[in-house]
Image (cartoon, rainbow, N blue to C red; front, side, top):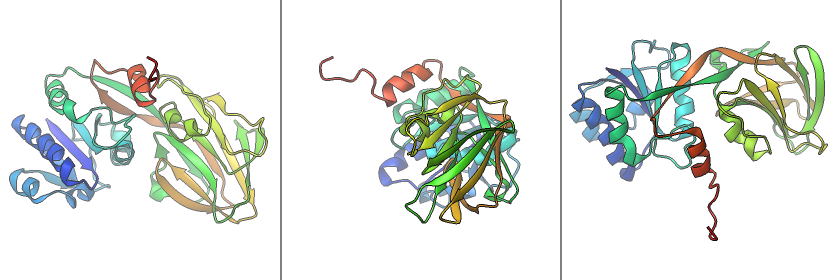
Amino acid sequence: MKIGIHGKKYSEAESVVIYDVFKRLCDQNAEIFVSAKFHKFLKKNILTEFKFEIFNPEDDLSILDMFFSVGGDGTLLETVTYIGPSEVPVLGINTGRLGFLATIAKNEISGAIKAIFDKKFIIEERSLLHLDSNKDLFNGVRFALNDFTILKKDTTSMIVVHAYINGEFLNSYWADGIIVSTPTGSTGYSLSCGGPLILPQSNNFVITPVSPHNLTARPMVVADDCELRFEIEGRSKTFLVSLDSRFDTVDESVMLSIKKEAFKVKLVNMPEHSHFNTLRQKLNWGWDIRN
């Protein structure tokens, strides 16, 4: 089996986890491919003890059978940019903190790797959003698993975001910005701004204003087969736009359009895990000293 691995800079305490991942994959005679970015952070014991190949962002990864993201949710979002339309399944190993997407805890690594080679895992398909614009943005990587945002920059004043659905005017949002979230991203930035939780299988986008001036401007759930278009204006002539954790700067002349991406992300999970279990655990539902 050919396994790709991407990760972040890690501490000495986490080095044991990283070593364990490489060791267990080698014990299974896996062919390992490591991202060039992660390769820079690997400790000497891994570099000298294990054999692997290095890949760059522009390389075709369709030869891989599976991809391991070792870190937190941010690492997994970065991993998605490597995989793109190849739809290689991704296993998220959580060495970070919260971990809505990277669901495999450190003490579950052994069982998860065994389940993968025994083919006793499940795959959850997650939809992405796609950005079109009249300017070159994000170096051509125009998709996101979590969300797209428009935010104010270099000013304390609000901005105005004019929103259209399938060409029909929806609203002019006077706010610090606006978020368009996928169901996967509904547990992220959108949630912190008052947006609803959406089940991953739902075919929806969520439009969530960030600190709107008008308190009746509430989050709105729309079908993901529609096209959302945005125009921006404000006292500042530059604004921030983001796809997941990647940012770019635009001005008032930019035209931005969001629709569902043609391909999906395939997240690998274990049969004993479920989305509801993750919600209860990560959001501390029911955790009360009276219980």
